[in-house]
Length: 499
Image (cartoon, rainbow, N blue to C red; front, side):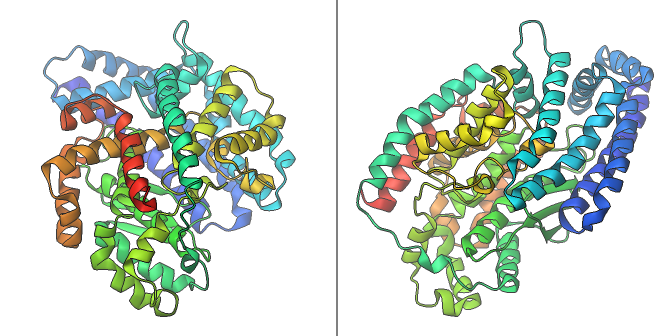
């Protein structure tokens, strides 16, 4: 290890410590913190983010990065850490310190303003705060933009390198051109699927019991992780031995079941990061899109298949005998795959899910590149839902206020959800050619372990050493190809609906 790299790591450890503290505050805010703690906690988050900023933009930190970039003796991992450190420096160094701290504090406060506005179905109450968040993000993007680079492309690059508007426009065009007509074909087929048994009296303590069972069943290690309750299910981690997931409960049991399996997929990815990478800048999932590929792979490709439920369904009936005792496995699997154009993204069926993301992508482009008036968002949102899904929200809670992301400043994040689904389908197509995928699922935990190990060896263990596109090419031999996703959905739902 060179002297410059050794000195750089001392700065990185301090930065990691501040980041870890902020993650803990985020976890606490969303799970156990009392309501009145918010404004006081926000000040501390602002202070900690300011310290993080100071570490990253310190002149000595810059000097060590430049020295390390010239060092040819660094290992592949060390060189990747230096690369990521350089990118983080480039991202922050152009932002004035006071603005960076103010924005961190604003986002902490903004999420509470959003939550209250959603609860009270009052978009006007959120407008001033949302305008501030958006203005900050556009300003920060303008600081970072290279000559001629669009602001929204700067934001997109934060979450998925190599996927700009030109690439995403083509991707979503494929979905729009092929999935919207196919959805209409399904809806006009006259086929009726009963899923009424998924709604009813499902006690929360029983939902928690089956949730923990399923999380452990798919491979979430509770010696390294915990599960809690939050308004919006999410996953976070301090390192690969402390991974935290949440879920939410209501009278739709499939909501909690699949949010747990989804978040477990995220958690398994983080737990699969090697010890030598964790707590470094490359010790996390390579991108939001690849992260979503793993969560949606477990939730949908594994979790909504009949092969998965064949060995597990008796346990579900045991926990809910009155609700599911008379529902056959075949009925249950059809029910959890029913296609119903709906309003809420997190409750959307697998078939229509990416159309929810398409709507958000188009609106974000309008906000960032066309300066759409924030006050017009509810109407624009409702119009697009009516156009693509044939439904219209009756209020802002089931419309524009349903997602937390914009309150957190996460503009450019949403496309990752659809990309993740497409990445997962491409990986699944390849895996089916090289293993008896459904046969493995039918064998239970041992079979899932084989699938999970394939994902660990080919994706998880690399952390951020590779990009999403590099992973796809190395695993499947091809660059990203969205047609696999469309073909997967058309084949699956043609079978479900018998058309």
